[in-house]
Image (tube, rainbow, N blue to C red; front, side, top):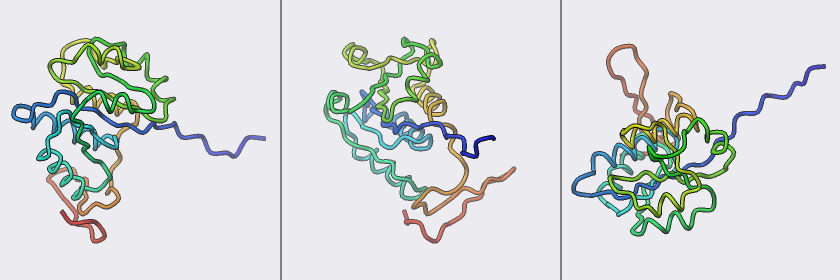
Length: 187
């Protein structure tokens, strides 16, 4: 007699991201894109090193309008989030092991801290990481690398409003439609 149990959904680890080496005067757009990609693809928070209060406010404004619980956490010392993290640390680098090879191990973890560096990542990060992971072995954007990792790990975000959203996209074949929601928070 066939079993009537539902198939188990794949386990999804809780993901936090550490943006290492943010340069407030030079990188605000790139780091904002990194935070928005992290949020949209399912990460819970972004630790920002060094802190940038203005950038954190901009990302918080997006979360207020579009929903979710994503937060930007200041990280004056990048070593602290890595040392304090209770589970695996994944350093995204084009020099790492292929993502496809490590994906089964990553999926078995309940929590991951993904470290995304800038131009110069200290060698210590490579040593402290549980895994150094590459989505490709050519120079590429850290935003693209994070998006690929999160999509492979957590899946694509589905359509629809997020909890607490003041607005939601209405998918259309042409044009742009945004719906204002009555129960959401206002930006």
